[in-house]
Picture 1 (cartoon, rainbow, N blue to C red):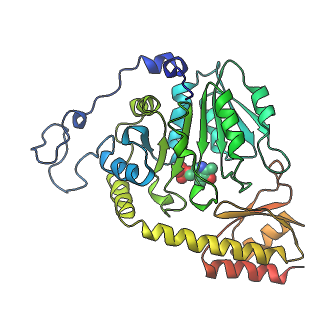
Picture 2 (cartoon, rainbow, N blue to C red; picture 1 turned 30 degrees about the horizontal axis):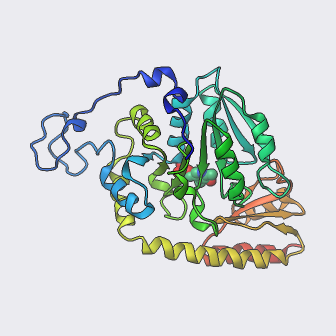
Picture 3 (spheres, rainbow, N blue to C red; picture 1 turned 135 degrees about the vertical axis):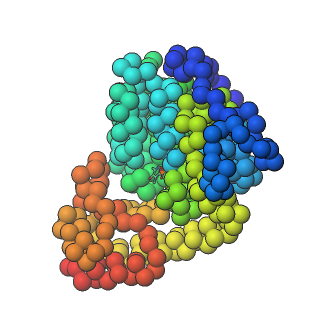
Length: 346
Ligand SMILES: *Cc1c(COP(=O)(O)O)cnc(C)c1O
C-alpha cells in the first residue's frame, strides 16, 4: 500500500486552522425544538440550515460506490473540490501543480486564482499520457497532479498502467477527474482508493446524472484528506434544494442508467455517420458523452452550425486539437438536426 504523510502536505495555516463551528454540528437530530441558529420557525423545509456534512446523501452514495461516507466530500460542483484541494495543499508563491495539455480548463484557472504555479505536459500524439515527461517535471514542491480520464476534450481514457505508474512515483496527491466515467468502457479507479493514500477521485452529478443545474460534485479520498476539505469549505456549501433533488435521483437510479445507455447508442450512431462525411477528416474514439471531430474547416463549420442554432465547441486553438470540434451527444432529434447540417456540407 502507498502511504503518504498528509500532515506534511497540508499548508501550515490550514493544519493549524480552527474551523467555524456551526450550531448544527452540536445537535443534528430531527425531533428537537430548534432555537439555536436564529432561523425563522416558518417556511419548512427551507427555513432550516442544511446538514453541513450531508450524511444522508453520503450514506446513499456510499452504498452506490462502495466507498465509506467518511471518504466522501460533496462540493458545489467538482469545481469547489478542485479549488479547495489547491487552497488546502498549495502554498501560493512556493508550491506548484502539474497537469496535462490539453485538458479541462478549471485546474489552471483555480491555480491562477490562488497564485499557484501551474505546469503542464503535452499528451502524446495518441492522446495518452507522457509519463516520463510528467515524472521529469515533478519537483520537491509539486503538491498536486491533475489528470482527467476520460479526458476533456480528447474524449479518451488513459491507460490504467500509466496512472498506476504515476501514483507509485508521486508523493503528492494525484487527482483523477472521472466526470465522464459513466460513459467509459474502462473501470473507475475508486477500487484503488484503499491501495493509494495519495489518490483523490472526482466525480459529478453534472453529466450522466443529468443534474448540472444543481451543482453537486463528489470527491473520494482518504478520510484525512476529506476532513481537510470539510474543515475549509463554507459550512453550508450544499443547499436544501440540491440535497433533495439528488436524493430523489439516487432513489431512482434506473433513470440514469437508461440515459447512459441511450447516449452511448447515439454516440455510436453519430460517430459512424460523421465518419462518412467529406468535411470530416477524423472522428476520435470516445469514452465520454461527447466526441472530438477533426474537420477541414473548424471555424467555418462552427459558424455555419451557429447560424442554424446548433452550438458545438470549436476546440481548434487547443493543443493537439487543430481543426477540431467538440460535439456533445444530444437527444436523437437534436443529433438528427446536427447530422442533417453535415449532410448538406461538402
Ligand atoms: C463537466 C466536467 C466536470 C464537472 O464539473 P462540475 O463542477 O461538477 O459541474 C468536471 N470535470 C471535467 C473534466 C468536466 O468536463
